[in-house]
Length: 97
Image (cartoon, rainbow, N blue to C red; front, side):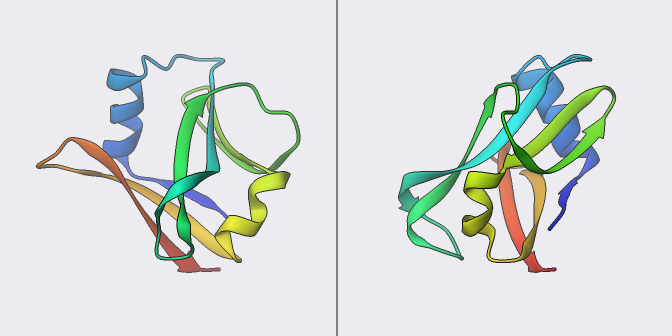
């Protein structure tokens, strides 16, 4: 399992969440909504230091990660993070690892 962020997504985090070197961004499973992988759950994102990261990647000194307790959500898929140019919102896709 990997986290792949587009250049647009990295710029979105800088602009919308004011990320800077030393920050950590967590992708996590949350109850409610829907995703291609799970009905009734969706992906959340927040700025928070890791507790027990299962997977992580770093760009410009910012760490992006998924906790071990949320691995089940991804069902052995890589997480691809991009931006919808019309809505200026993050969009997620999942590809089998």
